[in-house]
Amino acid sequence: MKKLIVANWKMNPASQRDAEYLFGLVKKGVAELKEVQVVICPPFVFLPFLKGLILGAQNVFYKESGAFTGEISPSQLIDLEVEYVIVGHSEARKYLNESDELINKKIKECLKEKLIPILCVGENTGEEKSVVLEKQITEGLKDVYHEHAKKVVVAYEPVWAIGTGKNCSIKETVSSISLIKKVISNLYSSEVADNVRILYGGSVNSENSCFYIKETGVNGLLVGGASLDAQEFIKIVKSAI
Ligand code: PGA
Image (cartoon, rainbow, N blue to C red; front, side):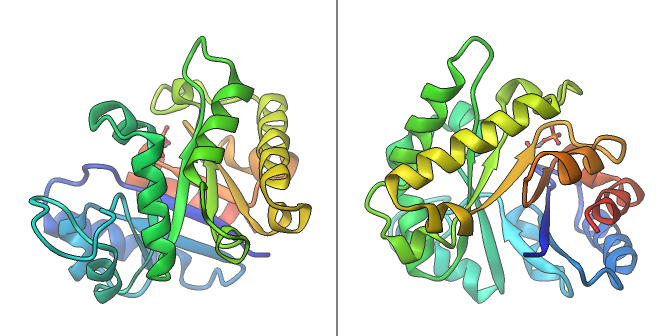
């Protein structure tokens, strides 16, 4: 299985020109690296202008069309050749009050439309990790049947590690990955758990990325801040070879 390195640009950069420039640098830098799958998740508004790498969106709505002001549907994303969608990011859970129930609806709609959801899960400081992961995965995948569940990507992103420079230790990451696999295995089967790709995210940079790749058993990384620096991001991608 190829390693999957996902760039989450969040609400950056400020202009289309800057987005095209950053994308162009990354595209050039990873062009020869066929052993890794690179996905760029820019803000919606830049999606139509970026071509030549796999695209992901940072969110989606769960309806096909209609009176849902401000929302974007899975089929609209498909029309822009988007393949992946980040769902349930902790910032959407926090600032947009996204619940596990809403996240579940989005995941089901994505899978119906053949978009691959990247379900973000992770505990906040002071929360019991195993309880949070079990709840977010079980409720996020409710009524998602086996064949669809296999396609889901789960990103373990402890909230306290996001954008703080305090990346999760290798030991903690290993234990989280095995917890996630156990929850999926209990919900479905060990075969499904082996197919679901699991990423780590939270203050990943070019100095720590290789340790996650080589020592934790993750299938890839979800990179926020460091993905806005083309050279830094390219180094992260190279560390996954
Ligand atoms: P970070 O963000 O790499 O800036 O910590 C990761 C994320 O929010 O996906």
